[in-house]
Image 1 (cartoon, rainbow, N blue to C red):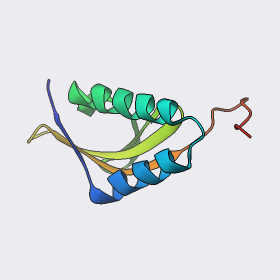
Image 2 (image 1 turned 90 degrees about the vertical axis):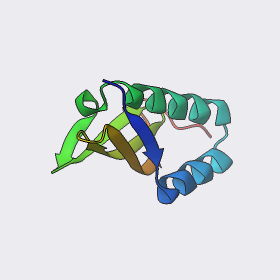
Image 3 (image 1 turned 120 degrees about the vertical axis):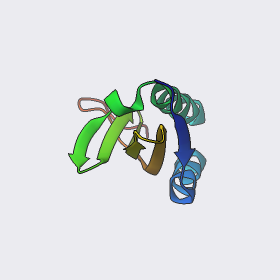
Image 4 (image 1 turned 90 degrees about the horizontal axis):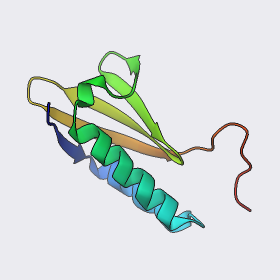
Length: 92
C-alpha cells in the first residue's frame, strides 16, 4: 500500500540542524532518503510502536517519530533526532 509522506516544519528544522552540524552530511542525507523511501510503502507496518499512533523508525544515524493515518494513507514525520548505534564510537 502506497503512502504520502509529509514532514512537519519541526521535523524539517530538526533535519536541517542535524545536517548542518554533521561532519558526515552524506550519511544524514542517505538516512533521510532511506527513511522517506521506507515510509512510502506499507508505512503502517514500519517502525516500533511507542504510544497510541506514535511510532519510531531508525536508519542510522537518524531516528524519527512518525504518525500513520491509515484511512488517508498518509504518514507524518513529526520529529527527527540523531543517534549512534550501540558499540560504535561517535565521530570526533
